[in-house]
Length: 265
Image: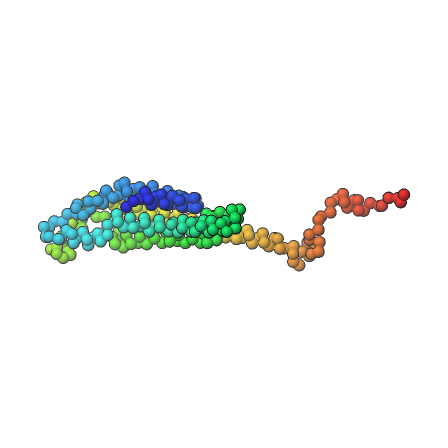
């Protein structure tokens, strides 16, 4: 799998992400993709070859390995990384759609015309796309963790497993290669996935709280601007007809109250 292509494509998401999104992307590539490519793949590269059983029955070792490892950890993590990073493509595609609309709008109305203040600004539909991608990523992370626990019943890999599937004779003992090393990497990948879940949840709450604050601030401004255009202005002893009048300064008041001393020449 070409992880460099995935990294180059996802690097464009950084400029459209919040601070939490940039932290999430760093954790994914440093603590998950890099560890996966550099170390984890080598640990599981010879897992079937090192799976030894105390029997010479043909096909028994393969049957027991398939029973205890229906899907390899390394392939499951590869699928997890693909499904977790794919929702970020939704944001990139939405921004590309906005840029195309902006280009067509300028071609129709002139170069000075603008349809969006900033095509990458998270307002309107792009905000919903970004929020939906966060929910999707969080769901995928939780789903794959549950799937890993469901298949192996635990994140811990034992040294010895007892197999009694056909064509093996009863009570065949099989030994897993490098169980301690594989257990350490399993817990590390699970922990990195849990950290990504926490970051996604924090970013979801951040987006929702900022949206609520923005709507609240916008509502307070609209109320304050319309307060002096209804009958509530009577509380301020102001008349609706005088709302737009320019206030009279103190000098003008003195001049208006002074007696007229002009003489007719």
